[in-house]
Length: 126
Image (cartoon, rainbow, N blue to C red; front, top):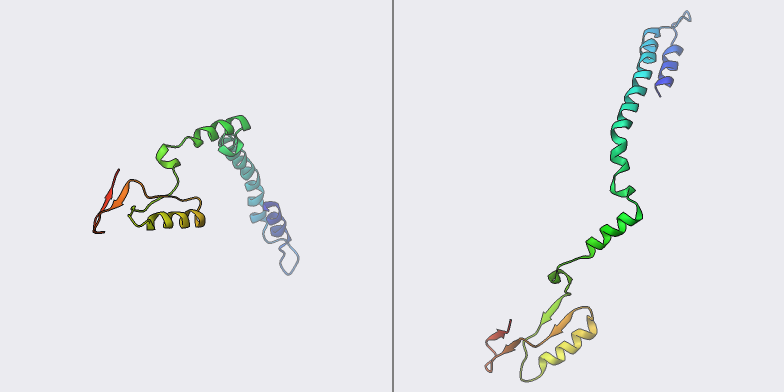
């Protein structure tokens, strides 16, 4: 692109046909090698970062990291749980059957929770 700019400066002529932007063309001719040197320095500085980035890991190293990532705490491995309070009329049992058919990924149960005889208090057995 800089070479094109040099060419454009050399193409500029006045009405008599003499080049008018020789100074700018000469300056651009000095800038081209400086740009090349700067590009080389940047590549030398940043290539190690690109070489050792996670995208360039070998397959064995990637598999090792995947094994480590699959370790999860027990609390994070459990699926969703819905706890319905057990009642003496069997309504909770019917609702559990319906929800298990409709949402098979959600565990629904009625143990560890109950409603007392007047229906006011729910006790959770944690």
